[in-house]
Image (cartoon, rainbow, N blue to C red; front, side):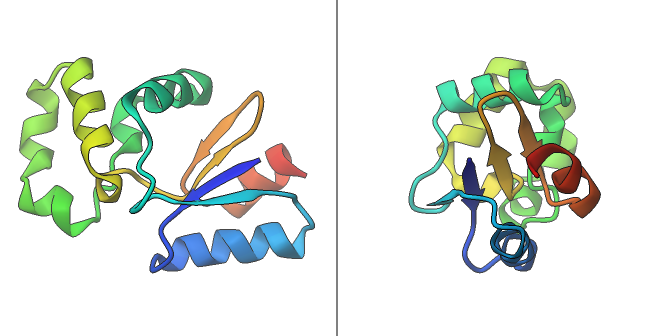
Length: 116
């Protein structure tokens, strides 16, 4: 399993601790230094079954500075994917990627069901 996280993110720290406490084998990937590519984001989006907007870190400073709340509704999916791939801090995290599912954000009950 791949855990895409930001080291300074409290939620990511909780997710990593949960993975370790539950003996879930994972590879850690720093979203700031190794941002997901547009191709990866497209694949993960399809696997997640979530609306693309759920991949945006809506509480992040960059999201707010760029006023994306107002811009996203007008953007095409292609533009959204390009934007997400441009900076890891725009992407909601943590992201858990397995061979058959993608979880965005850390909801312990969801991770418990799908990752154990």
